[in-house]
Amino acid sequence: MISRRTLLAATPSSLLAARRPDWPQAALRDGKQDRTTIAYDGIKPNSMVCDTTLRELPDGTWILFLLAGGDTEPSPLNYTGVTRSRDQGKTWTPLEPFHVGIAREGKAVGQGPTELLIHKGRCSLYFATHSFHWRNDWKSYVIHSTDNCRTWTAPVLLPGRLENRTFIRNGFVARDGRILLPFQHYIGPEDQGSKPPLERDLTNPRNGVLISADGGETWSEHGDIRLTPDDRYFGWAEPSIVELPGNRIAMIIRADKLGGVLYYAESRDGGRTWPEFASKTEIPNPGSKATMYSLGGESVALVHNPNPKHRSPLALWVSFDGMRTWPYQRVLMRESSDGPTGRINYPDGFVSRDRRWLHLSYDDNRHRAVYYGAKLPRVK
Image 1: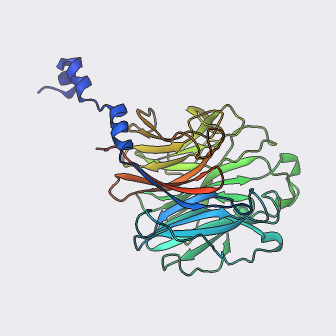
Image 2: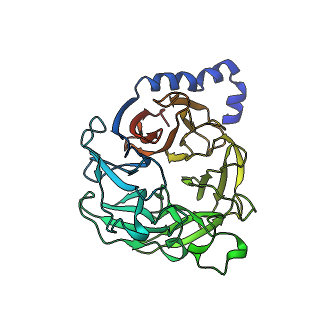
Image 3: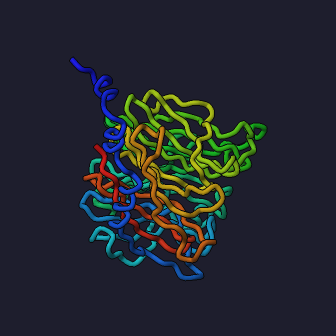
């Protein structure tokens, strides 16, 4: 019997090379099929667009939540806005304020969404509130809907320490049915540990995952991942996670002012345990949110700003070997509609059910919510 290794050794290198996908050419072909529309364009003095969150609802329509209000963030003027599409992003309803169930006043005057998880017909919106800035009275909640985001339950605080100073980021349902939600949480300097959590300095980010094995009814917290031993370090960590074969969960973390690259941590037991510190990657990043999407098996899509100094361009990279290499790379948007000094921020979205498209939203220079449909490469 001729082994596969023997067969490969006997195959001329020219034939092997011809069989390898030409990823640069594939990227060029795919780019010609992309499509984009403007979902919302803010007008001063209420032009803010940030933290866009795009999802497909159980009825097949799309919904886009975003942080709106005022011209800056964080701000007491910030609120949660919502727009919908019934034609897969071609047209969008006018942006409307979304009532999260907590009055925009006092300690909860500033509000914004961070994640919409959809599982078995239930939509769970994670959001946070503050009184002036995220360093002031920052609380974190979840609400649920079973009618395509029409009506909602009352807000519930996140479990344990995560009710304070926490953002929930893009989660997923694992192959074994568990739900995993990444979080970023701020515990403050070690010498302020005796103070109440909201009275400490806003520093010392910790990252991990919430895991539910009962459809989101109960949760357990896992991981306390740091970027640096400096307990007075501050940065918006914004972790993103993806499931890989072999019970592995990969996490990338934004690392402001720590070398212009993304950081990486991995769990080898399905998200239950994590390293104390994340490590540097070689993926350039200027200090901006990046998001990952499973394409099945070891294939992973990464949407990010591959520039160590500026939030442009916005690019799509794909790995086919569990994030060891990224042979498929292409630019989605080279620069902001406002020119080269503008920023392209906070990509977020979902993979189509047939895995042919990555449907994204992003904010264009903090005033425009953009839908972008990116054609994905064929994955075996």
